[in-house]
Image (cartoon, rainbow, N blue to C red; front, side, top):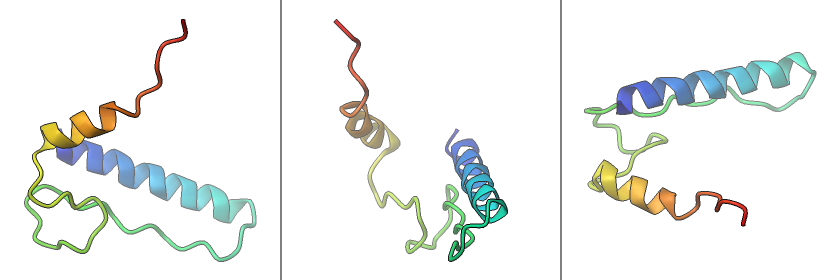
Length: 69
């Protein structure tokens, strides 16, 4: 699942980059790929260190939009 999410994030970043370049925006840089599970490179985007995926999901859940009353 994490590998699939990393692939989606990479394609979304690439799409945003290409769209921006196509519309004439200057100064855009090609996005770095998100790290994949099992990779050792800690300096890449997407590194969550030793935190389990469940803890990251719980943290992000607190920022979900609340249903309208």
